[in-house]
Amino acid sequence: MKRHYFIFIFILLTFLLPLFPGRVSAEEAIKVKLIQAERYGKEGKPDFAFLELRDLLQRYPEGSHVAEVEFGLAEYLFLQRNFSEATGAFQRSLSKLNYDSIPRVLGQIYLLKCREKTSGRTDSSPELLAQLKQELSSQKFFEAFDDKRTQTWQSPLGNLYTLDEFVDHLEVLLNGQPFYTITIP
Image (cartoon, rainbow, N blue to C red; front, side, top):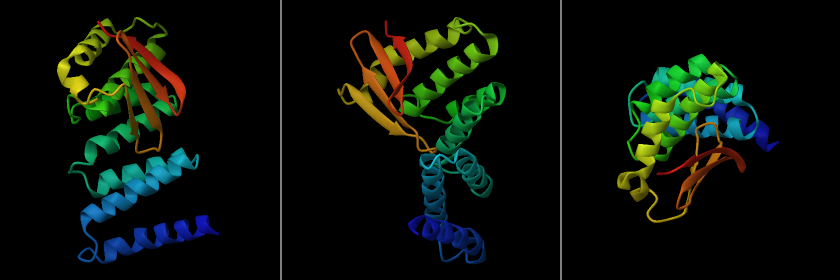
């Protein structure tokens, strides 16, 4: 019953928001779309989450949400095994993300994984790996951790990333499962 209520509210908001642009701020509409996309992702409906994010980007192409939304779109393309499109989408997202942010590190890791998948080799992008290691070893990135050993971030698709920092390496978990490990110089 609750599920039908949320779907009804979402459909109602989707059709009513454009009719009353002065009543709901763009910021509130963006927040509703992001929450709905995340909810779809958590419910195992990534196609619907992708549609929400794509619609959000089309309706509101500028703002602080754009990099995060583009990351979610790129993440979806990767999960659908569309590695060439995911590569371009992650590159667009990276150009807008803060240098010392967790999504930026994750985007670079996804780029590495995209190149590995398309080339079939794990050493297909040594320059990108060197750049990632340089960013990880920089003091600026570790300031984002505030001296904590573990940092988490939830993507717009509802995936939970955990970054466990050790003295010599960084382990990245995706929804509790190993995703990537990188040694830090």
